[in-house]
Picture 1 (cartoon, rainbow, N blue to C red):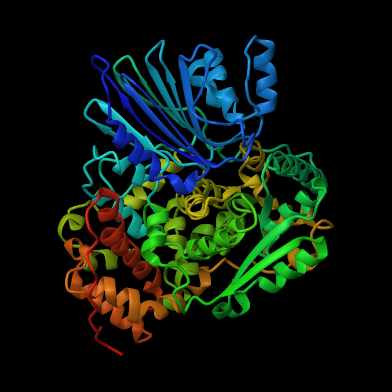
Picture 2: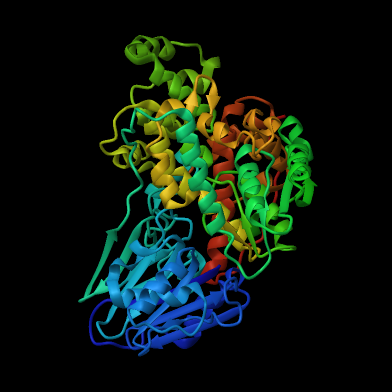
Length: 638
């Protein structure tokens, strides 16, 4: 919906915290997030900026918004789906409102509840509130982390923004790299648990608020991702499916709140198809749907299924077919949009899909999140199998650990001793043997095993029930810092607001109570979701196998990049990553990959390529340095 930013003074006599032109620069670097309107607020000890994408009360929803006396000021990036309900309660308490914009409830709600105000909100948001009476600031991120907040402590100031580039535009932040975080990225493919590529900048984690008051900066959790719960045993499958559908239908209905054109992303799979089917229940006109496919993807191109579903439901359908062998997305511009490297090529496809949808609508709903809640990936089916082995898990694991290398990740996951080993076996990219050969310099000084430590910290005391434990880790890690991350950045790069009904926090809390055996049943993934969808979505869509959007095209895409991006960025005379990766080992990996050997390293090479492009183009651009031209050399090997 918007982009917000600001600078807050933590202690000392109140003063001007940032020059007006710097606040303007921080604000306007977010113009793509909010091309319709802008606003700023500055007073001793505080400066706030907002770029607005107008969706609710287009004419009247100017930000910042204030309380009646003007002493409480708020800016918001996001959507509050229960704002009418909260507004009615506040009116009964004597508060007055001038607009119908959802953001206007925030300063009044803050007056009633103080820093606890996020707990009364249902939606996705990044919010900053300044309380001039108490000289207190509260910055909050929604429960599932759908909207981002970056922040950095700089002396007695805190700088924050919806995007990293806004924080860097302050000129207050040292852009030194965080090598521990880079080590995590190379293993996981994303920067987890609040980490960023920069040592001085953090992401506010989902369900957290940052409070500046009384000369202190504190970060507090106000909502926790639900741990797997023990569910009632006296419910039938039909009863479970009925409640699932009721809650999802409510979530979809709430997300139709809009005063501007609205549509849906339609991949051709179950999740987006169910969202579109539920939208059609509540809309008087045909749903506008948008699909994209890649001609090179063969059987993984789902355009035909999207077209079939659109025809069945009578949607106003738009689609685009591209080729990943060509320069579909300019990679430096993609990295500029993403803010930090995410080694997930689905971001390329979603970037193009968002561009298509933005030609017709300002808001689009999506099926994102269902796989992580209900067990949609092959690794989830493997985890469910491990769970069913029960007492036989130990002997089976011992056999799996002795299995031939050709059985790869499946054998490694089966042979894992606990949920953390299992997830790293299924999804990890940089194994210890390759890491030992590849890293050098400051990265070699980082203690190995960082990803395992982060996963164990995240897992906490969750029991080793293999499927629920893996879903819990996915929900707290990859869902937030990979999938939701690129969804937000790629869509907002095109001023498109994407809403995700599966990630309504009440729906997520409900999903944690569903028995694991109803999520993956036998070989059927997302069993209960499929049961709930049957009759609303054609059987052809319900029963089709899962096809990851662009994921299985990684090898073809990387081969297509060999003469271009790979040669330009990784094989030039002075790649930035040579400061911490062994150049000879990297060139060997690239040469082997080009020759058709060592194809398992595709994800590591993609991660390194995107990191190098980020170092070479994003970081200089964000801190105001010129971007150096790339010189190409010819790679050795076949």
